[in-house]
Image 1 (cartoon, rainbow, N blue to C red):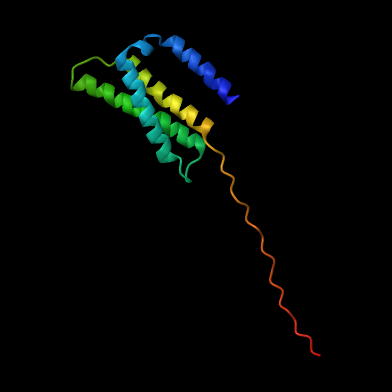
Image 2 (cartoon, one colour):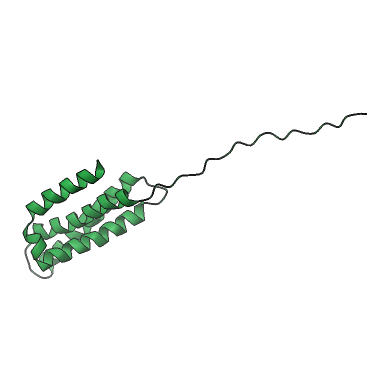
Length: 126
């Protein structure tokens, strides 16, 4: 089910952004989204957060990095805010957020054994 959902999302996004495959700038934004997605997932995937929290953190860091880059381009370099660059960055973090849980190993936690109460040996009064 998860793998078929991943294939469907990939097909939809590849038809929506055909220029994203050929433009070098979009490829760099996609790669930056991958890196920030991995960073966000790794930081929040420890034992204090569940998988859904790590996935949302991955998406949020990709969105934050893309928005920060576009705001930097707008304010400092005088370019326009490019929503397609932002979409490429978020799409990069989205692919990481979806693909990491698909390929993670399921760790079986060892079960704790219940200990029997110690029987005190009774001395026979013979």
